[in-house]
Every structure is written in C-alpha cells, then in structure tokens.
Length: 290
Image (tube, rainbow, N blue to C red; front, side, top):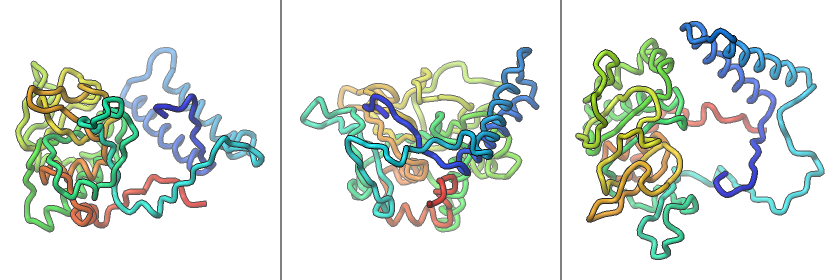
C-alpha cells in the first residue's frame, strides 16, 4: 500500500456482509447516544450499508473479485501456513545504507531478535486496533497472571482504545476491570491532563480514546527510546525522537507482541509468545478459508 500506485482489497460475500453489519452496529450506537446531526448523516450511512448488503445478497453487485481471465504483471503467493511466528516491521535505524532506514521493507520474524532486543516503551492504540485487540490484552493478562501469580511491567505500556463506545462495552463485559487492575493511570474526563506526557513509569497507562501517540498528539515516548507499537508508518520522529546518544526507533508489531515486550522489557522468544497467547483466537476476524 505504501509503494503501490493502487491497491484493491479482495473479499468474499459473507465477510463483506459481516463487516458491514459490524459497522452498522457501531454507527447505531452513535445514533443512540445522540450523536446524529440534523441532516441525518449517520442514518444515511446505515442506509447505504443496507443497500450494499442487499446488492450482495441478490447477486446484483457481489464482493469485488478479479475476473477469471485477469492478467497480472506478476503473481506472488504467500503461504500463511509457513508463517508460524509473529513478524515485526523494523525501521532499521542503524543500517549503513541511509536509504534503507525508516522504510517498510525490513520485516523480520520475532526469532530474529533472539529474545534480547531491549524495548523501552509500548503502544497499543490508534485506528489500527479494535475491540478485539483490547480483549486480547485482557486475556493475556489473565494468562500471565495464572502462570506467574502477578504481572510486573519492565517498560511503560500505553493503551488508547479507538472509541469511547469500545470502552463502554469492555466495562460491561468485564475486560476493562482487569486492565484497571494493572493500570498505574486511567483517563478521567472530569479531570483531564493539563499537559502532554513525555516521561513515563513502568506501568500500564489507560489513555483517553483517540490517536494518542500515533499522530504525535503532543505526547511522545522519551527521546532515544525503542518503541514497540501497533500503529502505522515508521517515519523518523513520528512517535519517538532521537536523543544525543541513541536514535529513537518505532517497531511495528501485533498487539500481543507489544504487550509482552513491555512486560518483559525486551522482545519475547517464540515460546514466551505462544505461552502468553495460549487459548486466544487471534484470527477470529479473519475471512474463512475457501
């Protein structure tokens, strides 16, 4: 997507309908909370989704698929069954070739780091995560608590839910409670912060829903930190700036990798990762096999 002139997401009918139904439910929550405007924009979005669902079900306009006789410049097939460990996008800040720093091309398996790369800061948030990610964090805490008796952070972990609606649902379902249990800070809209946070302790920060560190948002990790984040892009200085002694670096990883890295204070081994996510259906929202 970063380098392509265009990109198309191929789906199937069932998955597209499911996604539209999820979107409709989210929008309806906004309407129920009084967030609709006079022009009825939110209801209009639901109406459009209903129309699209009807088109899919009738066969009038099914999910986008390539023509059977479509021709391509090249075809690249990735066998996902061969990927048996998490991958990390690394900005490779010390690459001798400056042109290869801060790109999206350096993708490494977690085993590359041998469980030894120090992690100074973790961020789970932005529009790249959804409610399922917060469910995963809660279940990881339960797994680690059961295995070790308690959870101690060796690096700060900032969690910023995408929306207030998700926070409400997590509270109703019980997952927010275990996040609160290990939080050293929880946002309070009746007493908002008066300045951006730029220094952190080794604990969990439950921040106000929104972008948080993703777009800078005035808050950044400490200069020179090695950050593990669920966000997007590896631009220099986006989440963390350089210090006089060390380049700041923001590595992109999945939610479980970020969480475990802050608890350990380093990248986890494959075995540590698998133990922490035991029993968690990480691909719950993936399209079915065809």
